[in-house]
Image (cartoon, rainbow, N blue to C red; front, side, top):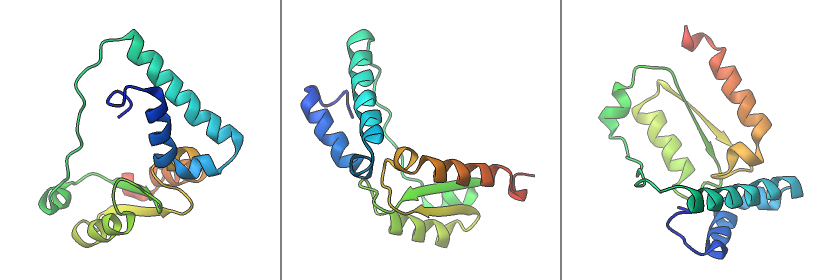
Length: 131
């Protein structure tokens, strides 16, 4: 997205919207996002960009056919899609996928709730589901 938004100002505004929970947090968290924006702009100026890879939406059948242990984490304030709808759909069509709603976070859940996200991932990786 940062590549598609040439002026840095617009990228900053977009990231503040997307990572709203981070910007409500500590100065350290806000600085992390600002550094990410700066690094992205340095990369844009330094390297040839490759085509964007757009995400696919899995069909119900494709979700049901996934036969590896999966953990789906989503922030309750996700901006790109409805977190509740995604969880409801996954729990209905693919109950084999472990799901978790992260409160107080959105698209920025790995930044604003880093400790909780790390704990959930480590718990999942050490669970019997991976044996």
